[in-house]
Image 1 (cartoon, rainbow, N blue to C red):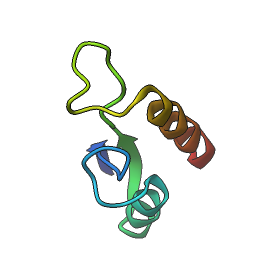
Image 2 (cartoon, helix red, strand yellow):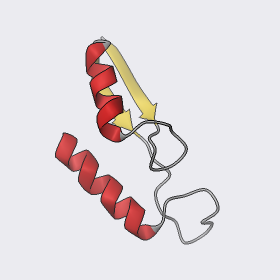
Image 3 (cartoon, rainbow, N blue to C red):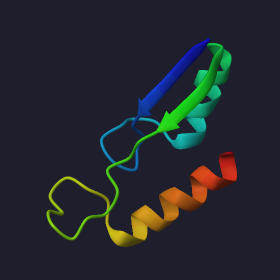
Length: 65
């Protein structure tokens, strides 16, 4: 079974939207796709999404599920 547990999107350092990544995974026969964005952290915001972006990201992922 094809799986991918570490996929980034345009919300952080990836190039494609979550929907584009999900569609590509389906087309390639991936059965389990784990989206792993750099969610907000108050410790170091140099590499992560803002709090608002993290909320939008989570909502979009839930909608794609």
